[in-house]
Image 1: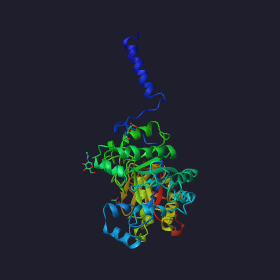
Image 2: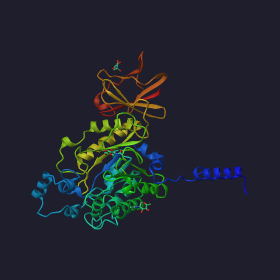
Image 3: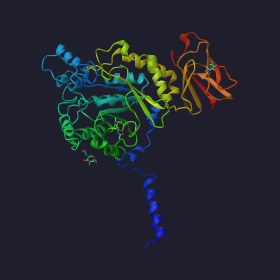
Image 4: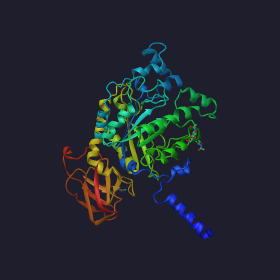
Length: 456
Ligand SMILES: *[C@@H]1O[C@H](CO)[C@@H](O)[C@H](O)[C@H]1NC(C)=O
Ligand SMILES: *[C@@H]1O[C@H](CO)[C@@H](O)[C@H](O)[C@H]1NC(C)=O
Ligand SMILES: *[C@@H]1O[C@H](CO)[C@@H](O)[C@H](O)[C@H]1NC(C)=O
């Protein structure tokens, strides 16, 4: 028999063996445990991703991807008139399904475009609130892209094309489905039953993870029910402990009412959310090239599309504040990404070709924003500090207040050869003499980056 001291020592050693010495840590199905998981590092390094909203809503392509809900959930007059004027009487939302042809969907061309845009990850709608699955889900009978419409596995095809280009693959998934009979039944039962979760939501989430091994799960449609209804913590503990993607997978925060901005992996908070100052938790800003919709809509006008300078300003602000920027496009029902979206994405890619050094794998600096005559956003990497300024100063002199210079300080501009002259301000900061070049010789047309070596 062991003495008391020896037994205690043995228990300590066993405990250490369980938590340290290479044994993987196990997560329990509760938020304190799940929230303590470190975020896999690829996500913070990626900084920029493309979001894709594609589904049966891309067929009417009018108003927004919430078409079905606005039409028949809320009964908005505009949607009723649109249906009356454009479709035969008795036409149902389900009748749009066969018209979702994806006829010109060439996943390699999408992947090539997203790569040229500089995206390090892509998040794709596997199923929006309408419930139509873009993969052959075994529990979405006749409301999936294999049985009707494209007759293809869109989720699988896009994933294969992205992976050939080393782009990380994220899957968007809506927990709720507006009109699913079992969901409506559970709500009628005041959520005392979980028929919908056990026979639809959970089987599909497990199927998505096992079949496509996503790098990211972008959960949505959580807001009507608590996480206990969705069984989210059980699913996440499986995802983190035992799933085929347990080491690399990243998730967001939409896993139940009141979870977003509090629990999960990184935080989205609300759509298009941007914090005012540097948060202490990794976050992502998701936004859409079409200000008014995530899904493609034919009634979009040029004024609805974010401009190049808006996009780049948001990207810079987001990264400076420690976030990732996820920019959405809505393809047409045929699987085309319209030229105005291509043009915007390529403009981001062109800017990142020059400025990516200040973006990818950067870290927030001790100061994020300096506002004087032009807004200057800071990022940092290794020993360098990057100052990205959004307007060219009138007298060709850029004043930076925050950096503390040394005699070894060196200043360059990304995309230009040679050092820039600078002088120390007697009080604080430095003046940088910008090169006097014709606009065509500048490395980018907007949002220039100076790199400061040896500053504090
Ligand atoms: C919730 O998850 C647990 C653990 O996997 C499982 O035993 C239970 O059946 C799940 N409940 C529902 C409604 O899916
Ligand atoms: C949950 O969120 C709702 C609004 O989204 C809010 O009214 C409510 O107070 C929150 N409840 C808790 C417990 O935080
Ligand atoms: C604004 O910039 C100018 C140089 O362009 C500098 O002289 C001035 O001190 C700055 N003001 C503040 C408040 O930082």
